[in-house]
Image (cartoon, rainbow, N blue to C red; front, side):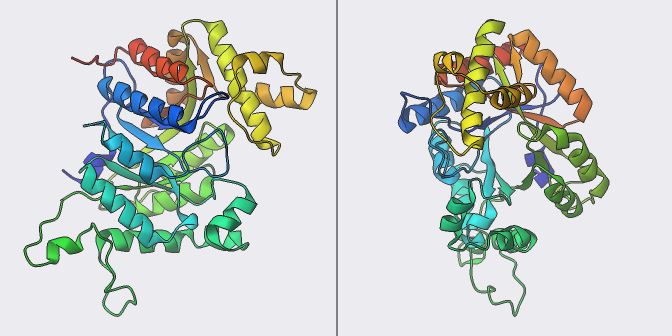
Length: 364
């Protein structure tokens, strides 16, 4: 199996491209983080059985409604409940961490779930500036973002255990990792987590293309930049040992419900959560009832309408049509769906309905 084989997915039934999952491990009002993580296990098991290709969790900090501050911990938990679906980070925010630590964490995950781990990397902090300063132990945050290519190169060296002679890290090894194969009697897994670059603008698109890496674009919160970023990625792409042709997935906010009215209620609650986050009042995801009773200001109402215009929602058939259209407009090689809602059962039902709409496999 080549590295590219571990990246490219397979479309099932009538789906135009492979379908995958981005789980923000959302916590609703009246719920606990334990409730959210139980939903993640249920969702991972469901989507594996229905033929979704991969399941990613994203690093966020200091957000009460998002319980995914530690992707590696969550992925280890999900690995214990799944057997086939790819598991990964969408993503780890590399400037928040020492590259050696990430190489160790994902080498450990690879040992737990051989051939199933993806390492998606971003350069944003995944939080506000003050929290980022606490994470990075510095208030010079731009330095971390500017150093991202160097951090990426260092991480890749640790993953491959191939620092050149004379490098100060030549005798430092990420374990579990390739060094174990070169030890007396050592046997090492042939797999190494493929690295993906994530982005919401052109920087990572260009870098991913130049390095011949797969690229994931955050369409779900930067829709206006999707087509330009994907075009830039494809134009910049240089074949590598990882990929011989570009491979791009996009994150898509999508929620299907049994009827259109219910879908609108659910996405309104998720939009209110975003209003509060964007105005410095992050909290738990409100209930649809709270959102319906909320007195939106004209500016807030404008934000909600703009936000929800990029959330594909409605009945299963309506969501399928929206996803098909988005794929045609962007040429994405894979669609990674994120369903944000107050209730975990609503999220699980959404992925089930979408699977039904495309005729995805049903568990034996």
